[in-house]
Amino acid sequence: MATINELTVKAFNKELAEMLDAFATKHGLKKGAQRIVYARDGSTMKMTVEFGDKATTGEVNPKFFKNTARFGWQAGLATSMIGTEITVGRLGKVKFVGMSSPKFAIVETTDKRLFKYDPLVLATLLKAA
Image 1 (cartoon, rainbow, N blue to C red):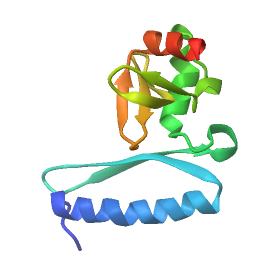
Image 2 (cartoon, helix red, strand yellow):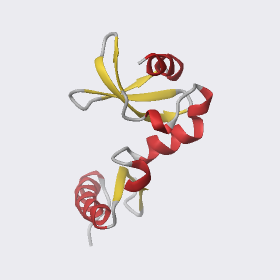
Image 3 (tube, helix red, strand yellow):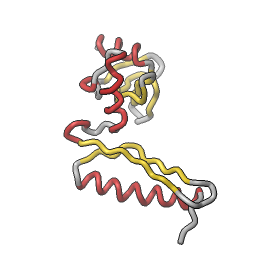
Image 4 (spheres, rainbow, N blue to C red):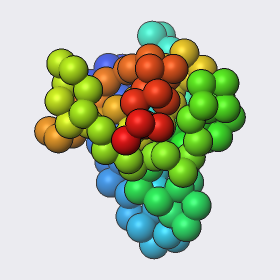
């Protein structure tokens, strides 16, 4: 029996990620971020992962898609805008990938890094594009 600690949780998370990726592929799903939280005393751990139907969300993180559908109207963003590429000042060419919360839009740079961006400013830039 493995003790639940930082090292074993990292190993579990890696193995679970591989299994969940295979599961998502088999069922036509897109896997979102995976997270494991554990008790420091080694007694319990909890894993959360969110899946989205590729027919609806495409290759977008399901959480970003869901939050764009839920909060995007407040800034003038819609799920149909996801995937649109624009150029912004210091980041250069970016792609809108959704919203993480009502306060932050997420953009992806050409080297696949994610950045938080002001949703009102991004909505204005996307509408102008």
